[in-house]
Image (cartoon, rainbow, N blue to C red):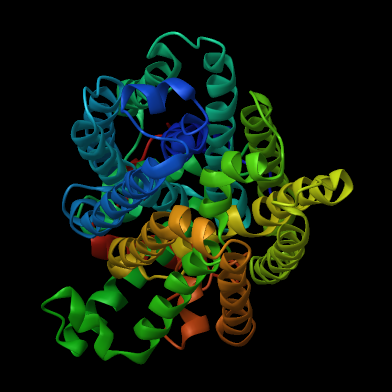
Amino acid sequence: MAKRNRHTSYITIFAAIGSITYGYAASIIGQVIGQPQFYTYFDLAQKGPGLSRTNTILGAMNGLFFAGGALGSLSIAYTASVFGRLRTIQIACLVCILGAALMAGAANVAMYLASRFIMGWGVGQMVCGVPLYQAELSPPKHRGFHVGLHGVALGLGYALTGFVGFGCYFDSTSTFQWRFPFAVQLIPTLILLSGSWKLPESPRWLLMKGRSDEAFRVIQKLHAQPDDPDDTFARKEFYQMTQQFALDEQKKQNLGVVHWWDYFKKASYRRRILIGCGATLSSACSGNLVVNNYQVTLYTGLGITGGIPILLFAIWNIVGMLGNIVAATALMDRFGRKICLLIGIAGTATCLAFEAALTKYFVGQDVPNRVGLGFGTFFIFSYVVFYATFIDAQQYVIVSEAFPMEFRSIGVALSLFAQTAAAALFVGVAPTSFTHIGWKFYLVFICLDVCTFTMVWVVFPETKGLSLEEINELFGDPVAVHITHDQEDDLDKKVQDMSIVGVDFTHQEKA
């Protein structure tokens, strides 16, 4: 396998700062609900007659965040196509800055709820835009690594919330205890926005906009290797991109595509949507955001008190980040995406089954069973090992690969919309569900896991090692040129053909 290009790695790592923003924003409420000053300032009861109102507001805080995320995800179908992949990330930064500032300065519940919706919209754009951008910059053999960085950064964002929250827990006399953790959301967003002006635009988007020379210069830098001084691979991939784009444009004309929904006339596009939405729903239906956002409450139910639940929250997310690192560096590009997803779904379902049983028999007993409650904590941690290592990063890689160039931003938007819409439902009803049906709420996710496992097993193809253009073949769509399996093609013929799109390789300077 060829070595990774450092220039490409630096770009995809820097872009992943946006993923830190999403991870932090999505899980910040998980530690804030363990901060006493948060309840005091907003006059929220933690027990007694006012508990029902508190649960309603907590559900709204999470539900509005993910509702905003769902709409933000949908919006990139337009912004990523019209303004570009990079500009979409920059727009997301601006929305996140507004949302984070309002959240840190919230004066009342209504203002806080509005800020959660705005922040959700921004990170919804971010969670779509970053892996889409990373995938279109990555070479086929290392795409799992580069897009997997998105999952690693999500895990880092999750972990940061726990440690920031744990530190702020000890300031028990002021609103700093919960305002500062919200203000921290501004840091990665401002860094990404400031540095993004030095990043290149996606070469595939440039090609779609007729900027062929600029697109090739980007590809040339992204795929440069010391043992390939003539940029042979870059030229082959660019040739494949241009020929596939021409073929796809002809396909659009044949389908009579005028509006985005016209793509669904073709069965292969409907299957792609099933796979894209299936990957993200496999994640959401595993209950990950419910476990993450309410684990402080779960630990309290297991008899753990004080600041320890917030510390466990932080450690849990560190484990999650490490799992994503393993997935990106050692699993996806070696063993593939599909087998990892199957292992992850089966593992998380098993952990939730044990958690449900332990909750049923040991939580709320007059005489606490320390061993049983200890195993309850163990299975919460086992859950994140399976989820982070085998599901989290993989879902974004699958989504970014499943769609052809002209439909990619729409497909990614619809897939992440499905995830955030499902998350809005699950986290919105979680407080009331845990109060009224307790351990039975876990059974919902176990049943959903059985459904998603069956779907992945039957429907999903394996995409590792293929270029984004060659993946078309897995769905029965034509591929204009194969490069990963046909390295001996006559390059002179390819260079000659490039005159069709106005690129003259002989006058391209090495970057």
